[in-house]
Amino acid sequence: MALSYEFSIGSVRAKENALFSKTDLEQLLGCKTTAELCQTLSDKGYGTVGAFDEMTKRHMDGVWEYLRRIAPDFGVFAPFLIQNDAHNFKVVLKGTMSARDYYTALLLTPCTVEHKLMIDAVEHRIMKDLPAWLQEPAAMAYDLLAHTGDARAADAVLDKAVMLEMLRQSEGFRSKFLKEYFRTEVFYHNIKIALRGARTGADRHYYKSAMPRFEGFDRDKIVQAALKGHDALVDMLSKLSDYGCKQAMEQYKSSPSAFEKFVDDRLMMLAKESCKRTSEGAEPLLGYYLGEEAQNKVLHIIYSGVKTGADTEIIRERLREIYG
Image 1 (cartoon, rainbow, N blue to C red):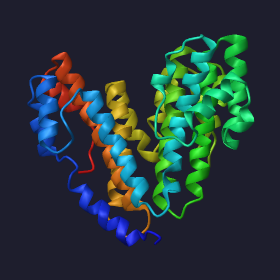
Image 2: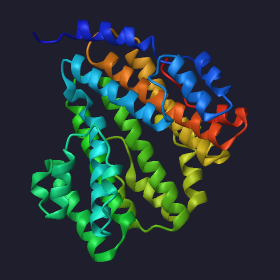
Image 3: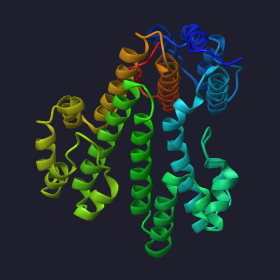
Image 4: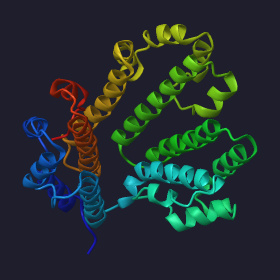
């Protein structure tokens, strides 16, 4: 019998109760060692005690298995999964070019392209076996790395392709949330490229090869400002109201890490506002997934801080907004 969204939404609403609250995070912040942290996670139902990376991977694998089982249309997650496809192609391409055989351990799941197919496509240079959106960028990235050794340029081609495909796929679903979410993500992807490029003196060709166009984004205006230098770009972006850019730049002036946190928090707030308040369609499932991803990122921040002995207040300042 076909799954209904009514059933799936009821299921994820129950699952949301297991997501960590801010009170839970405070308890985790009190852990003095990584062993204590892992034990506390297990006590809270996160999984069997083990190495931290093993616990988080096992948990997220379980999240994806659950979503595959209960989602009426798992295809709604494809715009998120293709980011892993792009990552995997980069890993295989660089591993093949450098003749390193350990790169398979760096491949991510879940993805839409099987690892073997990705490896065969690169090793035999048969890009036609890849998804249509990836074929041309993959061939371009291959040639760039093979002939110039410019890994940054190769990555830029692939990153631009995946951003465009995320936008295209999100437009295909009856979800205003997905459209807004990915436009926000791509907007800040472009802003980060512009800021990095302005610091390093990138040329016009690089910006255009790395920054995707989309409706409502004035790429030419951003590029023109970036070519004038970092300060000119920051000044221009500080006056831009789109996607909360003005507030984001205030954080950037404080520190790049504060800027990154602002972007992550804005995306999470979009999910909380759109997905927690609806009881129909795919949004509740998407919100739960993004909640798990945000929790995973926060746990890694806490783990890193505990491992390095960072001050608790510093760790707390780095934490992202959570869904729970």
